Image (cartoon, rainbow, N blue to C red; front, side, top):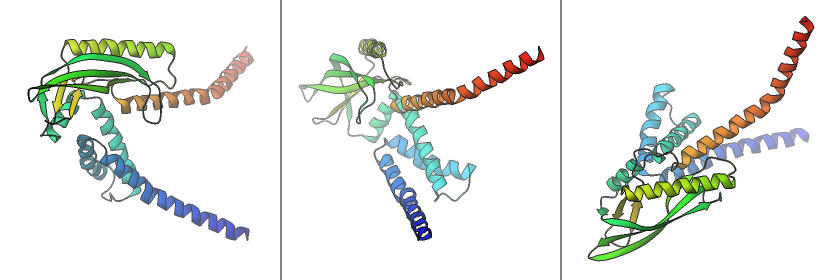
Length: 244
């Protein structure tokens, strides 16, 4: 009877594993790709099989390839998220119906957003901008026009104030230097791109998540290593006293 139960549990575990690895994970991965910006999608689809066949094997329809491809996807997402100028140009390229219009930022407000299911901890810049099209002036309020993400697990009042002040200074500089662009589809839709730097560290959410995970891993390594380090130091002290 016990043997029968063990066999049933093993078979059920294998079935769950097959469903998870062969169906659910690939499905989630495809969904990630579908909602990704076109450059990240192209980066992943083109480079994944090429690099996999170059460094591993030609058998790309495997679990190993899926994991490798997901790593390539995360790498592409991190790189893309750091490049505001490239994001603007790629959006313009993949949306040829959108045109650049003259406009200006007339107001902005900086606030702090705590970590929720929908967002990560960050300073958020809500911006109001105007532009003219068809002889009419349009005014738009962008509630999340720019963000400065934190890579801390916990943010103190001092951290929050520092991020808010830094983002406030940055937005003022961007407005003064006109370091932004406004695109519109000619109808009622528009989009503000700010900033247009070639590289921006704090606006990159995937990069901040990676750094946060590295901090967690480093902290765990230190915590786990402390007892061994303590035992090693005691042993060295004991040997030193034994020789003297």
